[in-house]
Image (cartoon, rainbow over all chains, first blue to last red; front, top):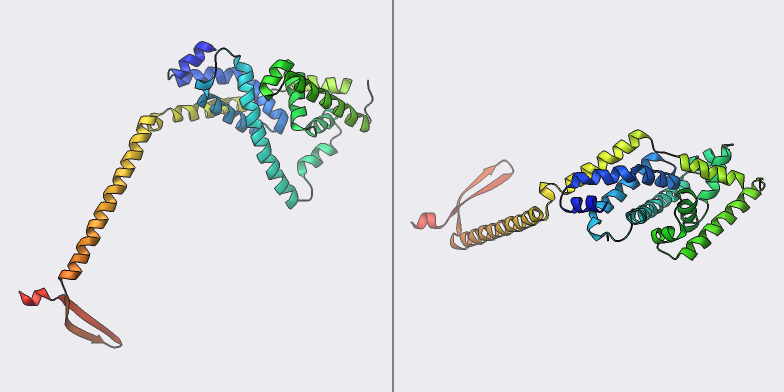
Length: 176
Length: 103
């Protein structure tokens, strides 16, 4: 990775294709977990890669690359999420029923119900849950990505688990 | 909770469609090669900025000199009525520079 970055900084932009190919699947999947739409995920991930390319000279090669790129991606997701939330607020004020919400609530799939519960977590709880439970990062790595202490990430994760369990119990799912 | 574990397992299997991946790679590479292209090199961006400023300067100077010339022309050349033409309800005054008659 270090030699690849050096090559890009020397002016070989085509070498960046290897970085995109190495991370596109992971970053797209992560963005999809926030937006549940592949086109939104593609737009966010595209902006992430452009930011990575433009800030590559600021990357310190003594630090691991993966948390660095995830940190940029998380920021991109968050700003896109804010824009989407604003747009949705405007739309929901215009239309009585949010079609997406109705679709999920009408669905009988357990996974969709849990997905809905995860979506209702706070941003930090959802991010800690996504990074550690789904992406498999350690609390130290997740802390680096989220810009806080490992203990704080663990607190967010525990709160996320507790909230999910409470919500699922309220929906009739017992501790199996 | 089994349902939650099942959800996590399912989330781990989610993978983007190939078409989305290909679009992403092409879009990113197009943007990047565009950003590092001939017209986007800092040197050429400076050249375009300096060129634009120079062009604006030349245009301003030329406009200033034109307005000064026309003002002088008005001062130097007083006008005299050569003839009056009346057509129906229209009246036209034909003006000529006074110095035309003085020569």
